[in-house]
Amino acid sequence: MIDILAQAAAAAPTGVTGNIASAFGLLGAAIGVGLIGTKAAEAVGRNPGASGKILVQAILGMALVEGLGVLALLFAR
Image (cartoon, rainbow, N blue to C red; front, side, top):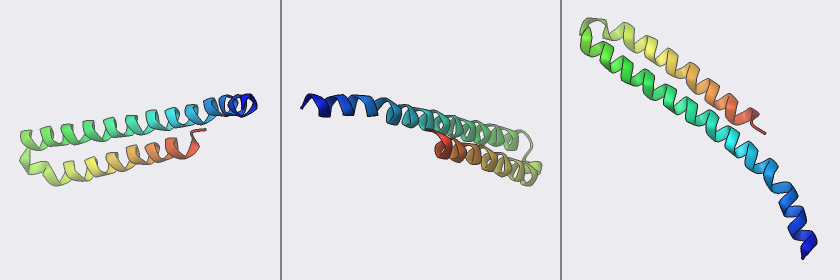
């Protein structure tokens, strides 16, 4: 029984650190997307005529941020 607990204790930190690293990476991506959406809505409120250009820039920014989030998820170990 003690051997099983020792093996589980030795293996636990590596899995937990990878999960924590991927969680922080995805949390950063979620915050980034939220900030981009907020600022895009503010920009459209200030200048409704430029909504098409603002939408394109916001979608491009969100795609880049989400790409970094996916990379954080894939490369976290």
